Every structure is written in structure tokens, then in C-alpha cells.
Image 1: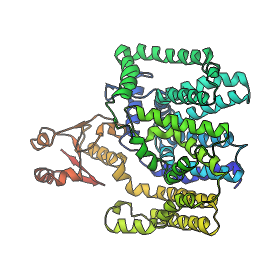
Image 2: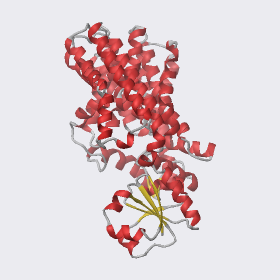
Image 3: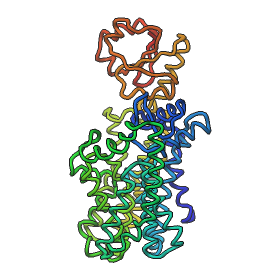
Image 4: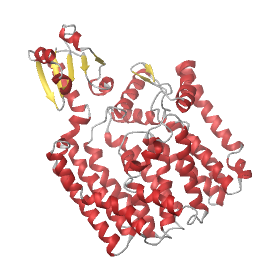
Length: 515
């Protein structure tokens, strides 16, 4: 395969998951439900979730979800996945072009594979969220700044593209879209002794474009949602979440822990390079810029009260490519080899560990031929990496081997989704509930013991209400369909006796009851 077609391999690896995976209830299905509600009510700037104002996110991603529903008449995973996968590929391609004259083709290939297989990066590429979209625009804005600073390309076009990319980052996820480029550029210019040139990049044109586009957005929000919604968007979802979060509140050191699994299996390598190589090996402007972006963003996010691991996503590409820039000038050493050997050894034990966990029941639901095949490739990649690492002392081949093993397990594991979708999503249970409702001539749906069931309306096309078990036992509900979890049923003997007289159907961990 030619090097210019590297993205085909990544796309093939994630294709089975795109085809077979169900939507997760926590966020993915909720975005679909919000988009459906917006289409029904004719809202395009002020969004609502079950009638309650949802000012958490800007409109760009929800517009994409709405567009898919309008174009195809339904929500399709393949379409929505494109807006996570394509941005991920754009990020990798942008970083690859950025380092084109500083890394050999061999090192560029390794850097691409490292980024594409960083745990949370590939996870976000497979998840229906707006984070990867925001990261793409942040990366493009920072690349455009660097081109402006170096005098590359069309100066006039770059001076317009820079604020547009920043705005689109804001319009994708929120204030982080401007904070990352603003603070990173300011710190970098200060470190480089060029802070006086700050206004050259963040001058009247940049601020004019940002203020103009944001003003139009906020005006549309005010006209559609009124002052309370605008206040919620501008203050509650920004200032309050940053200072004393009501959602995802975590201590300052949270990302010091999260980075280890977010960048796995390369976290030991990257953190090791930061500890042992910073200062000694940072010799170019590009290296200084990359590590400045990564560290500045890391510190900024640590100060903000609201924290989850995915918020680190804008730093991933800069940590990985900075590490590769530095590694390209480093020689094989024991600590360097060990940082790769430890995850390689874990990979080597993956198949045996999986078999044991399946036999003990911990991962019994994942006992599927495709995962066994994927785990076999992962095991072989770990063994091969150790061989390259210690037989030939070849760092690149060791990393490439492990990365290919990860892409293999992602590919094969994707075929297991049809057998586990009933455990992770609502589509199967909702289809069976709809069939039972049609047989019993009802359109009323209730749930008990299910987290976030509101978004089931995406599949049922009717509101879904939570109920208390006492009301069910007292026959408060009739001519309806009740969906409960197997766990809640096992914990309640009166409920077991009650539904034993009813028409029921089991789908995975759910029981559907005709009341």
C-alpha cells in the first residue's frame, strides 16, 4: 500500500464497528433524541431535551445529526461516524504535513500509527461526539498560525482561515475551542521572546471575525430561546462549569492519572521522553511549539473544575508528534526500550488473559470468535515487538508492530457487536417493545431501573417515562409496555410474582412486560 493511502487501513479497521455497533444511551442516543426534538419543533439554535433547555453544547454537531435525519429519514451510524472518523484522519494528515520536512518517511509512518492507536484517540474516532470535530479545528487553527508565523502559503487566506477555524472549534464544543489556541500561542510567543507579535495573529481581523460570528450566533439563540437560554449558554455552561462545576467535577490532579490510559499503550514512552529528554533534545521551533501546546492545554484543563478524560483530546496529537520528533534523534536505551517493552509484554499475554477472564465469567458476554482472533493478533504483535526491540534494537518496528496489532483487534472486535448490542444499547429492546405495543394496541411506554431511558424515544417515537415499582404493583398503569432490567427484577420478589402473570419477552438484560 502506498504511503499516501495510509488512511485506508485505518478506515478498514473501524469499518465493522461502524456497520454493526448500536448507539450508546449515555450521549450518542441523547444527541439523536435532541436532534429529533429540534426537527419536530423547528429549533436550530436553542435545543431542548425532553422539553428541558439543553445549552450544554453549541449547534454544529447537532446540525449534522439533524442533517442526517433530514436527508435519509432516519439516523444511520455510518453517516454520523464519518464526523468523528474523517476529523480524526484530517488531524493525522495535518500533523503529518506539518512535520514533513523534519521527519523521515519511516518516522512519519510510526507517528501516524502511534496517534491512530492511542487509546482515547481511536476511541473518540469510533464515538459519536463533537470532540474530534473540535480537535480538528483546533489543530487546523494552530497549523495556520504556524504557517502565518513562518510565512508559508497565502498570507491573506491564512489570516482569514485562522479566526474561522477558531470559531468553528468554539461552534463545535465551546470555550475550549478558543482557549487552547489563544493560550498556547501566547505562551509560545512569550517563550520565544516574540510576545510583541501577539497582535499580528490575534489582531483586529481575528477578533472582528470571532466577535461578528459569535454575535450572530448569540442573537439567533436569543431570538429563538430567549434571555434565560442565552444566559445558560454564556454563563452557566462556561463560567460556572469552569469555576465550580456542577457536572464532571474532579480534583486538579485528575489529568495526571487520565493521561496514562488516554495515551495508552504509548503513555510510558511519551511521559518517559518528557521526563528524560525535555531540555536536552528540544532544539527546534516546532518541537517547542508542540510541547508548549500540550503542556499549556494540560495545565489549563487541570485548572478548570469540570474534568473528563476526553477533554484532553486536543493534546493527543501534539504529545505524540512531539515525542516522535524527539525520538528521531535519540538512540536505543534501556529506559526507552522498557517503556515499549512493558505494554508489548501485556499484549503478549492478551489472549491468555482474555480466555481466563471469559472462563471466570468476568468477560463472558464478550466470548465471540472475532475477539479471540483479534486477541491472537494482539498477542503476536506484542511478541513481534519484543523481538524487534531486543533482537534488532529497532524502536520503530516495535511500535509499528504493536500499532498494527491494535488495529487488528479493533477490526475483528467490530464483528462481535451484533452479539453484544443488546447489552450496550437500546435498539434491540426498543424494536421488541414496539412489536409488543403494536400487538397490544398501545403507544404508552414505561421503564423501571434503566439509566437515561428518555432517549428511547428515538426508536419508539413516543415519550418514555420512568415509574416506581410500587405503582406498577398497585396496577396504576394499564394498557402500556414496561421495560425493566433483569437485575432490578431479581432484587424484587413481588415484582417477579406480578409479571409472572403477564405477557413478557426477554432481550439481553431487559424484560419487556405488557401491562
